[in-house]
Image (cartoon, rainbow, N blue to C red; front, side):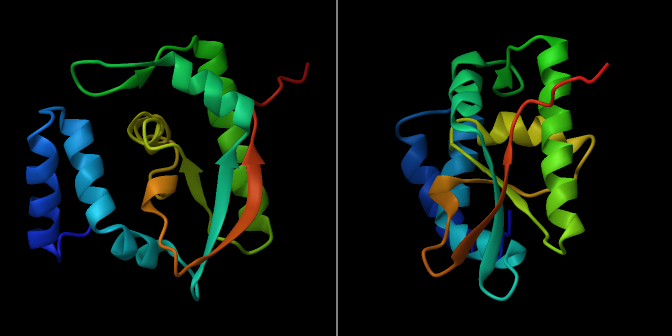
Length: 152
């Protein structure tokens, strides 16, 4: 998260802190406050090349989201986790093959858990929530993430 506009970040997190002490929710409030700067850092010529989660997959992940001591996490089995990571890798690779530098878009509730999940294998993949999108950008869909199907 860019910290150039620290006043705006502090105002947003302070306002949110009146309602909650959850670090993830405070972080998301700060991110929304500087959403334009976050988007500008990943957009190419005013265009955001976006990967999205398949709607039923996103709904299932929202249902599997659980709070934890170190933040929210996805309570899904290891095989489904692997299939999700492989699906993300396939979608990113396909977008990169056609010269796009994609970002992964998901719901605000999922963003922290998804970011932690992909950080080890794809630390440079930006994960943004729909709430962070800057209205001045053109959003160009470049792919949809599905669970990868194992081929035998």
